[in-house]
Image (cartoon, rainbow, N blue to C red; front, top):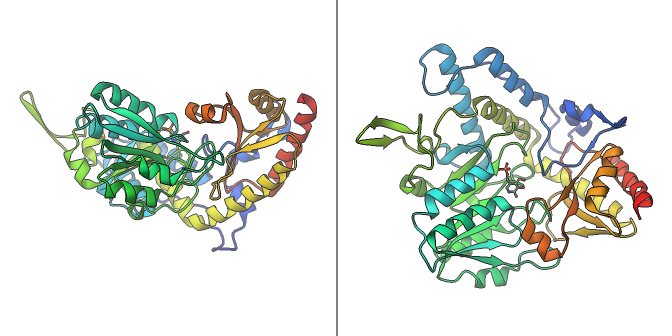
Amino acid sequence: MSAIRPTPVAATGGIDWARVRADFPLLAREIHGKPLVYLDSANTGQKPEAVIAAVDEFYRRHNANVSRAVHTLGEEATTAYEASRDKLARHLNVRRDELVFTSGTTLAINLVAYSYALPRLKPGDAILLTRMEHHANIVPWQLVAERTGARIKVAEITPEGELDLDAMHAAMTPEVKILGVTHVSNVLGTVNPVREICREARRRGIVSVVDGSQAVPHRAVDITAIGCDFYAFTGHKMCGPTGTGALWARREHLETMPPFLGGGEMIREVRFDGTVFNDPPHKFEAGTPNIAGFIGLGAAVDYLATLGMANVDAREQELLAHATEAMAKIDGLRIIGTAKEKAAVISFLLEGAHAHDLATLLDLEGVAVRSGHHCAHPLMQFYGVPATCRASLAFYNTHEEIERFVAALGKVRRLLV
Ligand SMILES: Cc1ncc(COP(=O)(O)O)c(C=O)c1O
C-alpha cells in the first residue's frame, strides 16, 4: 500500500504553524458568513488532509476485509491495519499485542468493567473514581457495581479543580479494588499526576484504569512510564477518524480476562462443544473492525509524530496562556478550572447569561464552542451549575482566532447582559 505522507513541517522550534493549519481543509470554512473559529477540539478534533487521504485511498484502492482473505487486497488491508497498531504502540511506548482496538474510550472502559471487573468484584468491594470523571468512566462502573454489590467511592477536588491527593491516597482503603482516574479533565483541563496516583494504587494492590481521552491528543504520553493497569483513549480527538480508539492493558490482565464480545476474528477454533479463543489483542476484537478508520488513525499518528508531541504541547500551552489572559479581562467572566497544570481547555461562565445562549450567539459570530454538562454531571454538581461554555484549543488554532473569539465574547456580552 503506498504511504501517504503528512505535509512536511520544519523541525522543533521552527514549525510554521500557519502551514500546519492549512493541512486542515475544514478550517477554511465560513460559518454564518464569518471565518470559522473552531474551539471544540475536546469534543472532536479536526482532520488533516493526510488522514482524509488515507481513508479515501483505502476505499479507492485497497478495500478488503482484514485477517481473512489470502488475496492481494486482503493482504494489503491487513498489513495497513496492523501497521496502525505498530504506530500507535510506538507512539505511546507500549507493546503492540497489549493494544486492543475499540471504537473509542467508551467501549474501552466498558471492556475493562465487564471483562475484568465484573467477574472479580464482590459485595463490600469498592471502586474509587474522581469527581472529575467523564460519564464514560462513571456509568460502566455503576452498572458493574449494581451487579456485583460493590460500591462507588469518590475522590474529591479542590475549588481550583485539582485532585486532593492526600485525601485520594487516604481513600485507597483495603476494600478499594479498582481506581478510575482521568489523565486530563475534559471540563477543567486539569492534568492529573497519574504516574504518582497509579504508583500509590499499585502499592496497595489496586488496579488502575486511566482515561487518556484528553491527554493523548495533546501531549507526549508514555503509558509504560505511567505504570497503570489499563489506559483507554479515543482516536477522533487525536486527528483520527470517529469510531476508533484503543484499550492498552497489561498482558497478564488480557490473558486472564474473558472475551467481552463473541464472533468472528476473536476465535482460533469454534466447535459446538466449545470455542478456543484467539490470542490478545484479537481475542477482544470480534467482528469486522473499522478498517479504514484505523488506517486513518495510523496516518494521524504519523502526522502528530512529524509535528512532535512536545511541539504540539508547547504550541497549545502558548495559546492557552493567551486565551486565559484575554478572557480574564472580560467583566463578569469566570473561568472554571484553574489548576496549576492545565491542558488547553477553558470552561467558563458569563454572569447573567446562560451557557447555551452564549454558545448560540458565538456560533453566529463563526465561533464554535461547546455548552452543556460535558458528560460530567458530578462535576457540574460540585460547582453548583447546570452547564458551562467550553473553549478547547488545538495546535491548529491561531492567536488571531483567540482575538476574534474574545472580541465575539465581548459583543455577545453586550447583547446578553
Ligand atoms: C475525558 C473523556 N473520557 C471519555 C470520553 C468518551 O470518548 P468517546 O465518546 O470517544 O468514547 C471523552 C469524550 O468526550 C472524554 O473527553
